[in-house]
Image 1: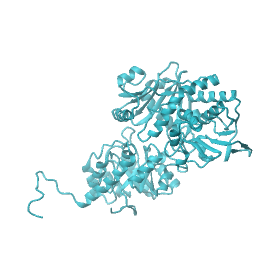
Image 2: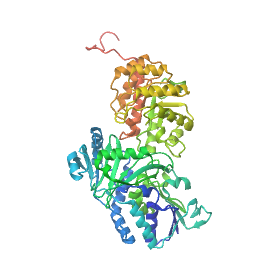
Image 3: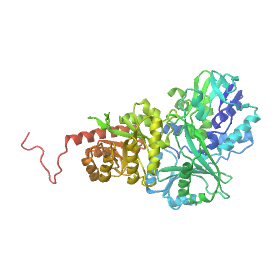
Image 4: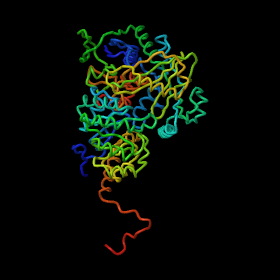
Length: 351
Length: 251
């Protein structure tokens, strides 16, 4: 039996795929689906999020994005719940002349990598998204990017696990033993293999280079759809994104703060998000404020996840940083021995 | 290379790095190593000194001295408070004093900076204030007891280079504390120019951390600072309007 420590989008996905393949699994988490997965916006946007030093992460992201349509369809079939998967692309816009110059340079880099992106003028951006501010100078459309609602994804995963009678033990793991887990009350659960998928808390349970990176994120509610696709942009040098849901929700995120396990929502964090979001889409200030949370991304020194066996009886599936939702389907495949070339990029042995 | 001395402490590198903007800790680590820096500034407001695996661990591992800064402060009051927190958390009395006037330009506020500098010096801090390229203010801060002055070349993160080399020269001429060119560096020639103008050191972050290949740009900056320093000490030839044959009579 596999003991999955951590019931976020990664741990639950692994449990679901393994159970589907006929394996015996148990999930251990005192509060499933309440950490980074609860905060995340759910952008499946490897193309628009490409960065100069992160081509390996791009490869992982593209492979994961390819897996999402089938992953979502099977999950919806197994659970009977929608995950609000949408594939209308990400529009990356620039606000000032400086932001436009930076975006042009990034677009040239995307071209060099052969990524399917389209350059748009400010007017073309606003034809696609009329609620964008008239001062948007130009943009880049990554038409293949998609997004899901991570809260629906974890709800669907939990429902699918329940249907398959996979136990979800609502208790805290305190020690990882080979093939076994000690719980906070001293009880020991035994299996053949432990899979550590505890996100930002992974470093507390094993010697892994994972640190928490705080993100504050807010959810607004709109009676009419405000946007048709994900919009992200630089506003005077600081990044912000808006993710629209089918039910009228608009997610605005997210700060990146190196503050340990601090999860306080701060005035300054929300101010910066709203200030920048309002510059891009002035109409956001009319929306209802539905929810604000701070989550902890599990980050590694090179921003790549840690996936694979460490030794007999212990495997890792953690360190997904900003990409846990995107990378969940690929992570489950890597743990099942698929795509060895990509698995090598995520090898825990690299540290 | 001759040593840089700030408040009695010696450094063999004259390149001071910042950490903002790096895409990952690994990229930052590689860039810091390539830069050869021995002193690096970190923003106290965006950091939990107690957290494991943070940028502070990278600096400790590489034996790079930490220079806490007060980035994000708009008033002398906030800056003094941030410096005190840094001293308590990191056990260093050194502080790069940065008090910003407005969010768009991130230009330093001279009055708040001076006010904070006076108070911090009185509390025993080693104060390195970030200022505009203003020779008068630089002199006043030196008189107030600052350990160095850090005039900008251009706004933070702008990469516009040194917009007023004349003022930087004036600051250098009258200063008896180290002058550290801070902010505005875009590429290696900017860093070399700062040293040629007589600055004692260069502080930069964005030019490296947001470069397409940060470690390579860090190497370029290290070499540029060395080249500029050597050129300054070697003594440049006077500028002439017309040509002067280089190989006529004398050997």
